[in-house]
Amino acid sequence: MLAVVFLIATAGYRVIEADKEVTWFQAAYMTAITLTTVGYGEVWPMSDAARMWTLGVIVFGIATVSVAFTSLITMFVSGELQMLHVRRKMEHAIEQMRNHVIVCGFGRTGTLVVQELKQRRVPTVVVELRPDNEAQVRQAGVPYLIEDATDDTTLLRAGIMHARALVVVLGDDSDNVYITLTAHSLRADLCIIARAEQASTEAKLKRAGASRVVCPQVVEAIRISNIITHPNVVDFMEMTAKGVQLEMDEYVVTESSRIRGKTLRDSLVREKSGAIVVAIKRPDGNTMYSPKPDCVINVGDTLIVVGPTGASNQLATIGME
Figure 1 (cartoon, rainbow, N blue to C red):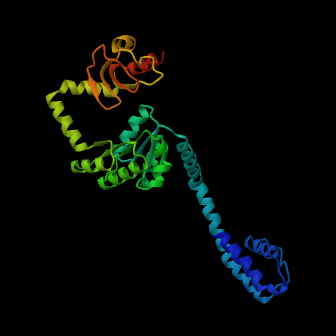
Figure 2 (cartoon, rainbow, N blue to C red):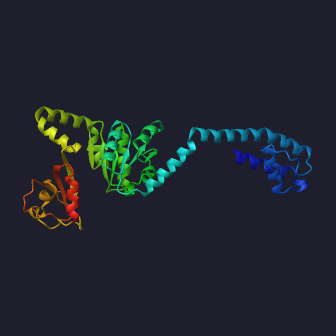
């Protein structure tokens, strides 16, 4: 607004005093000393029309300058400039992130997901639409974007092309379906985990491209039933999930892994790490449960293991020895 007033005032002097061949520099200088109330005097002998124009510049120009400086001071005092700097740093950090998880929605479910991922040291980016939730997202201590996740540009800025997974946990099923469809169109190979508020939405989310669909109603019903019928099994699963005394993890066999091409017996996984291989998932999607000792471990296999706390770290170590 200040720049517009400056340009209009300068152009006005040029037009009004055209017969006196006033230069752009002289007009701009006259505008500057008028807006800043320096008052050096007239740069050239002015006509009455030019003096009337100066009065208008004083009235509108000083008002504009006052508003501009007041807004600037307010930005400093309220910390908006600092927040702008913080957001730019976060956007730069997001651009550098690789193999991270994008969480769309920071409600009750999204908050818990971010806490778990942060505890497991998984790089995470939050995309939240509501500006009033920014303080809560900031307290989570992860990079975030206060933007609409249904927009392609937002997902691209969140690093969807380099992410390992996308978690969609908004409270509205229609938004979850739309975001899932948008993300799948950008990256068909991306692992998308979506929440379904209603069980009937699960099929729609899968058609939209969701790899996994979680329905809280179904999960809670299954959990309650398991607590009633198999309480000890539930306790065991909770213990492995929390990593207290026991933990359940997975290990992907790569080209550099020393256990590739060996049988489960020769790999000495249990002897060296203390972990028990309960299943082996092949690259084609087939899963072998309770594999036999002579089962061969191939590149691309995923070992599902259960063992004492720290067993997964030991397994990663022996895999590279």
